Length: 315
View 1: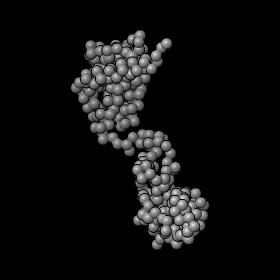
View 2 (view 1 turned 120 degrees about the vertical axis):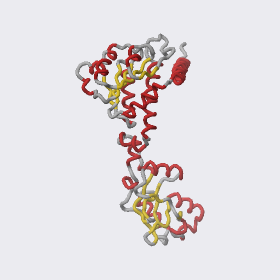
View 3 (view 1 turned 90 degrees about the vertical axis):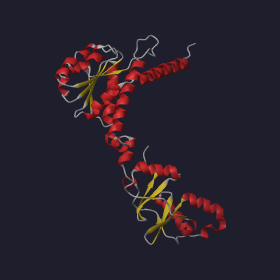
View 4 (view 1 turned 135 degrees about the vertical axis):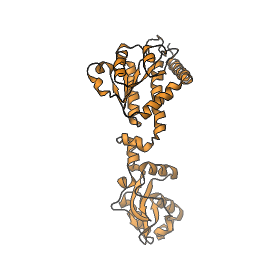
């Protein structure tokens, strides 16, 4: 019987070893490639055929989302009219594991004529691609994870990681931050959290407000009708405290027969956490988790403006 777990672990080991070997073979060509991309006034055009093309699309997408403008260009389409998208100040990355892919090699003369800086990614130091590109990034592997040594596996993995290494190095040089990433991903979860503020999500209408002398039965009614699981105590137009439905249950258990003789001030949590309306949702989310609470009051100078709850933050 075939042990599929053993097969999977073997694949992981082979590809991991390929990456370790690649790390030890990085040279100054990587530094020069990063420097060229960082200083270009143009974009990065990534070109690859077949599986290398698939890897190229991912590398290009990673560049674009991390502050380095990039497009992917299919070599066959390039040769049939799309070469016009390559401007002379663009950096061109050509990916071919053999370094001899015909559709890739045929573009070198145009790129030289167009005065483009070229970066070749291949597994052969002596390939045509390595010889005629300005910089060569070696991604050779000792063997593929494919048992037939036919399907690109280890080789595509190391090519992808080489692209990731370029992108991450450029991120560091550009001081690219999470806020920048969010600009390029406004529809994603991270983008929404980084570009959304407490004022955008907070409940600000019909807030459950009581005063320090409010009776317990009225407190319960306010919490129930407010549908936020809490009531905010306002005294002299400032936030004085908060009572949650959890406070009600705990106080009921402690005081029992005397429970309904209490006032809001007797069971309130003083100095509740207050955030400003301009606090980013990603920061509010940290407060929720660090403080282990479900609600934050939103206000300025202790003047209540709204209530933000963890349930309002989409995952």
